[in-house]
Image (tube, rainbow, N blue to C red):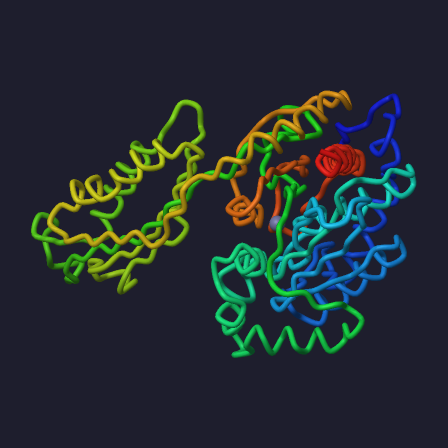
Length: 423
Ligand SMILES: [Zn+2]
């Protein structure tokens, strides 16, 4: 893809020491662990490939003079010391696990941009009052162990480590056993207790959507993470012979469900195209060509960055479904509800000022996807920095980003970290 982040003049300070080629090469090296034939990566959380990725990260960090730590849920931290003892660190990072057919940039970018920021601080001879730490959170994706964001949830105190690690993958392997297998190869990592005071957290990530690329800007200033509501809808009619039962006497669950979907689609329509509304599963039973369907099950994934709109539209789902049930029964269950999260004004302002001072075109946007930053935001001032990815495609082997955009985001990250660590 065409890079939007190229700038004619080299900025001063830490941003000027960010090395585009080095950052790109590290992505390619990291992507060897779990590499797939079509260019993607399959690196399940706490797998052998994940272990090798962690080792690579630790080796790079040690070469930069950083100490390497882990904690009881396997979060991996690398630390560049500050000049004043006892101050809480500024933390940055993301995750190294991937989807089964994931790309080279989702997660890895945030970790590698953090490492690049540390190397740029070294190269520019910049010291900071506070320590700067880079973290790779355990099991963000949630594709091997559910739920996702396991490491950041435990760090934020939402769940205990033992409880979180009791979950098992599809083969029955418990997360704590998978972690133990990896940790056997990491005797040199110092072990910390779970959680510590964090001065501020900044996560860099590819956007995983098309907005930055369409706006032709290399950097996104992320203002928060939109809220999510999930619903499970069950429509119950009555099975009947397709040849003998007149339509007016049927209780056709499919016909009722289609009417509901049409009405929901109208409810969720907004001129600004901000509402995210998805029916990702739709099951018709018994699924026979000559039987009137007696049951339909479908799911709704509804997201919006504004809490009021999330409530107003989400609260109408039940009434809309009931109004279009016809002769059928309908059951509506809300299976997940997460409020939107607004990032911390101080950290967002620091990112904004940095972007302006470095002269990058940028736009402000909420994150459409969930990230570890959502849980960090519960315990410390938090924000995110996005860079474009090609055609907005992610969770896909074809996921791609331009070296200059990745470098632009890393410049913003590095300068932001230095400002926060000297504040
Ligand atoms: Zn990610």
